[in-house]
Length: 154
Image 1 (cartoon, rainbow, N blue to C red):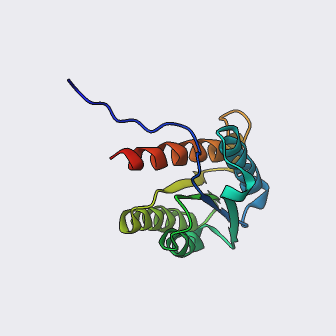
Image 2 (image 1 turned 135 degrees about the vertical axis):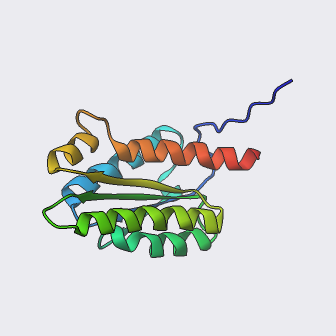
């Protein structure tokens, strides 16, 4: 018989760190609220959630690493918004934060969830922070819930 392993969507007693960028805060505040909403809907209590603010997305990997290695959290959610401008800065920041977040997860074995919007326009970011395209903070929290439970079963 084939055994299927899936993560459930229950917070249980797990603890979550939400790492939120202050840059583009009009977007990231919505991502933060979406993530908190998802976690609370799935059983997380306020004392299981800690929000940490960083200046921008580029600073996320270092703080995510510190949080993941602390042993205090079962998952770290990285929530930010990198919006393309007229210079190559977007490309550097988007590439480094995505690589850094993935590396922290691989190095620590703690789910570090990439909830950083990388969009071509402010309008696209707004759509992904709670309007037309849903709330990617909510989606990141759902991924965190599933990954925490999945890792417990493997």
